[in-house]
Length: 118
Ligand code: 5GP
Image (cartoon, rainbow, N blue to C red; front, side, top):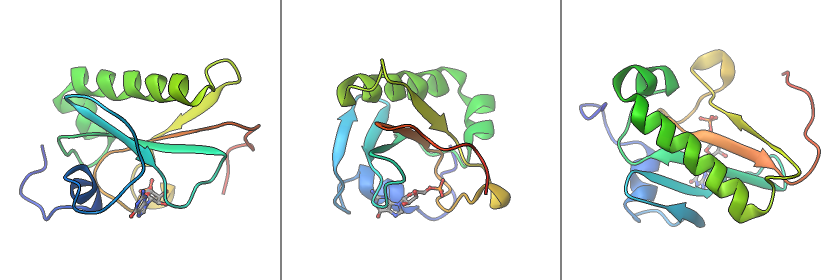
């Protein structure tokens, strides 16, 4: 875990210090709606323990990465988009536009999604 650096926004959301529209949580993961949705369904899934990005999470705790992906699937079930389909995205560092350095999966769906690109 990246415990030495200053807290990010998402630690404050997990702690309930900043309000969020919580969709699901369990012992190790937390899911809440993105404040600027890019699709009809746009939920962020984070591990409660902070890692900077998905690569660091994968290297340090692959079980926890698996739990994040399982929670993304759970969110899709709760949102009713398993059949219609959805996208799971981990933006990583500058060119991908990562702005919060607490790893998070974007779960996007509820409508046809555009192609990847800028
Ligand atoms: P990134 O660009 O790092 O992959 O994604 C960060 C996401 O966090 C963005 O989609 C942004 O809209 C979302 N976000 C930023 N601030 C807040 C906030 O205060 N609350 C919520 N729910 N989402 C936020």
